[in-house]
Length: 185
Image 1: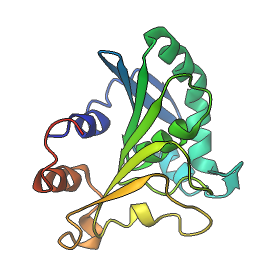
Image 2: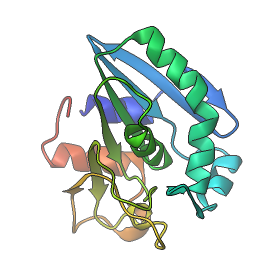
Image 3: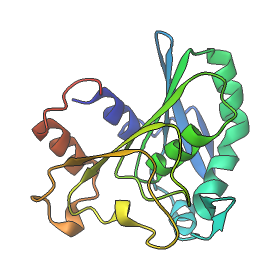
Image 4: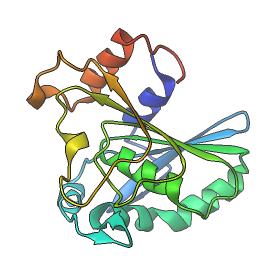
């Protein structure tokens, strides 16, 4: 099973840091720090998902979530002193991971590996980023106006999954296994 995916979707009962607008957790493995952002979980998350006006080139609801976390995140990253950072997340967490990956405040190399992420930025980014999408999942097509995706797309199980049931961690997990992505990406 994909270790990064499992880290992104499990264990949100005790995140490392949480605000009413979002949460993240950390995992240090050697010199690499993995930062997972939480998916849409609370009522406030749902409201912010629909605040889609661009602010400085970023989806305004996702920007509010990201900036509610950034001060603590920067401090935690300094404490870990990694040589590389991998940002990850499922759904809204993936959008926040893409924003973090494009943020120029981190001094070491960064990468985003995201799953089922909606569009979060007005312009294509310059950072290393891979996004995994299951066919029929409508969330990666949202929001339809102004926004674009960041990074290379990897299509999983493109023709099999019905549209309305495609945006679930269990569907992504099965598609990763079916696609032969087993272990760390």
